[in-house]
Image (tube, rainbow, N blue to C red; front, side):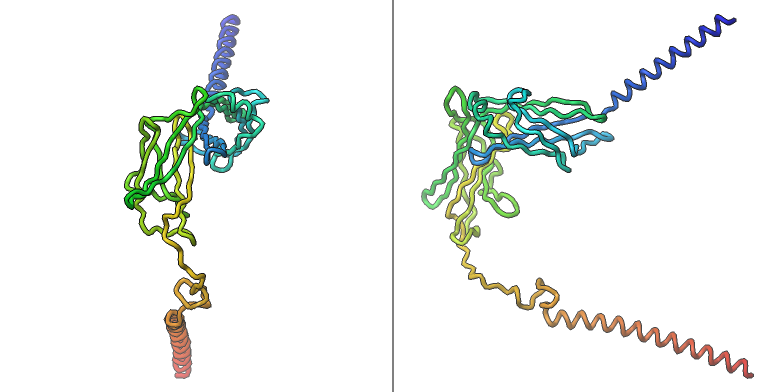
Length: 305
C-alpha cells in the first residue's frame, strides 16, 4: 500500500513537471512576431540614408513597434562597419545617414548589404535582417521639339567598374507641388528600355510656377528590389509666371477674414438671429413670471372667499 502511494506521488510530480515545461514553452512561443524592413534612399545621386521600419503582430494585426533599439551595419555586423544606433519613433520608423567614415567600404564594391539588428527584450527576441542593393543613379534631361516638351530619364547601375543602363525599371516623373508630386502626363509610371531610358511628354500647360515661371521636375524609382529608392530633380522654366504684385485683400472684409473683418451683412444676420433667440427667451420668462403672479393672486382670492 505504501509503495502504491509513493508511485502515485512520483507520477503526480512528473505530471507537474511536464505541465510546467509545456507552460514555459507555450509562453516562449507566444512572443509577438517581429517584422523589420530596410529602405535605402539616394537623393540627387549624392545624399544617402536608410529608413528602418519595424512592426509587431498583436492580436493578428501588424502594429508599429515604437522605442525599439536598432543597430545598422554595412556589409557585416562588425563594430567598424556600424552605420548608426537608432531608436524607432511612434510610427515604428528610424532614419540613419550613411557616415563618411564608411566611404572606403562603400567604394570597394558595386553591391552592398545593409544589416539591422534589433535589441532583444522580455517581449521580443533579438533579430537580424538583411537587405542587398546595387549602386545606382538617375540622370534627367529635357527636350523641346516642335512645341512638344519632353522629360528624359535614364537609370544606371554600377557594375564591373562602369555605369551600365538598367532595363525594366519603373520610373515616376512628376512636378513638385506643396500637396505632393503632380504627374506630367497621362502615365503614372514609365518602364525603362534596353538603354535604361524613359521619356514622358510634359502636358501641364499654364501650370503656375514661381516668380520667374520655374517648375521643379522630379523623377523617382520607388522600392526597387535591386536599386532601392532613387530620386532626382531639375528646375525648368515651364510654368506660368506669377505676376502677383504682393497686394492682397487680407485686411479687407471677407468671408475668410478674421472675426473683426467679417462682412457687414454677415454681422447683421448673425446679431439679428442672436437678438431674436434671446428675445424669445426673455418673452417666455416674462410669461412664466406673469402666470406665477396670476396663480398667487387667484389663490389669495380663494382664501379671502
